[in-house]
Figure 1 (cartoon, protein in one colour):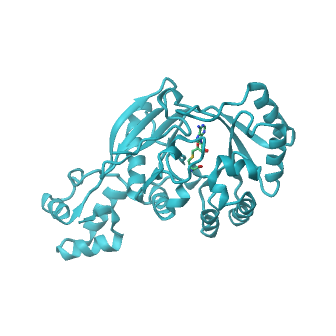
Figure 2 (cartoon, protein in one colour):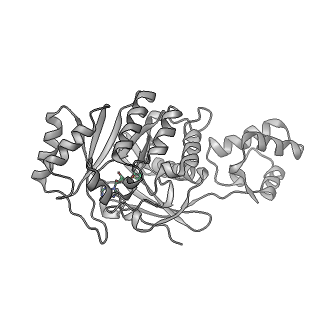
Length: 343
Ligand code: SAH
């Protein structure tokens, strides 16, 4: 049976006609699905019971559910979502000031196998459907209101998976989240993070992507990056740079680079120099991320003095550098610690 949320508006309208209902019923159902975020037919209270029964007879409604929720001392919260096939993905809410950022997953597992990331160790299971990505948002948005008295203000695609390897679903989810007659979020409040999939970045540039783009760079030295991020083998630093320049030219946007400082791997002054040079063609912001230890992890955090030197080197060259404190470490909700997925 087809899931109701895979229908286009036209298909839904056709179905509504076929059961002799009025045209505006399609609009009502659509609003429940893509604006109010209903999780079942029962919630569609302005539809007759007969119509709800008709819908249920013809279409499944495979909504994700929150399976588990854990709260961190720092007020962030990690959610484990159970999908219709019993697969699991994780999402995180991160409150700070009057913002609430939701970190969402785009795949169950991840095929890229970055050596520092826990998600990479579990391998790839499957792509999320766009409705499942929207579910993460809708379910966490309700909890955000209950926990923090505030709705989600920002969304980052920095959970499990590589969003550019699930391109169509991620783009459709973003369309739903930003639709003015839908959830209505501003694209400027959404950031997609990629490990550097060149083909995907080219496609984003073509469609003049209006959301923010972050790239998990972690090294500007080919030999180092190839080891810590195997994706580099088919997406060289050189090609990545060209794709980012094109992205900047097409969208006018600045690129955000994420850079985890790993002791003795990518934290030397030479590494900082390579990074500064790599950033020259376009405006960038660099987010320095602390390495979060993962189970059986291979790496260590940089020493504080090494870290300061590295950051100072970049600042001295007038680069925009933020140091991001990872939240949720006590509940394994921090960057690179999301690993659920098996049934
Ligand atoms: N695949 C995309 C989306 C995941 S984002 C991407 O790579 O950008 C997850 C972020 O957490 C990335 O910047 C990733 O590099 C970072 N990360 C992964 N493992 C980490 C760890 N152990 N400590 C800190 N950050 C980590």
